[in-house]
Image (cartoon, protein in one colour):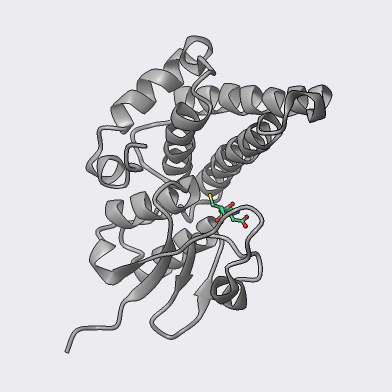
Length: 208
Ligand SMILES: N[C@@H](CCC(=O)N[C@@H](CS)C(=O)NCC(=O)O)C(=O)O
């Protein structure tokens, strides 16, 4: 009998889902996960999802024992617990802190970027320029810090690098007007290499 799988509530365009997918592939765990296409969208509650994850967001992972695990960072922590041989969140305190901080910077980049896109989607007269400017500043400072972190990082792949790559993949598609490589050349070169990894290629969003 085959072992029951984890179920991953998934959307192909979500950078947070991509973090989990890249992590699962890097850990060799993809065959333990059933991908469940899950619709989430502005202004519409997914009633089934919100019953198991009160934030109503993807990714959400349901363990074989039936526990809902969220958000993306906690899911990767769970994957590390299930398969500790290839850890993506190190146990060494200094490395762990560095990894989790980088992960937070990458998540913050996406969050500020989403607010930029939301603001830009309003008609021009209804936009709040100071707010837009504030969010663009966050995007640019997150990129600056990721550039510094990558310049200082070794060869090891952790959740920090995976989160950065998922965020940069999203920036390239959703904030394509931002020429971030010019300001952050180390990060740009690193990402262009990292994006060729099978885990990144396999988890790439479909072409629009
Ligand atoms: N902190 C969460 C963020 C997840 C997130 O924002 N997911 C988006 C898709 S990219 C979502 O589900 N949005 C639907 C909503 O907010 O209602 C994580 O790391 O998993």
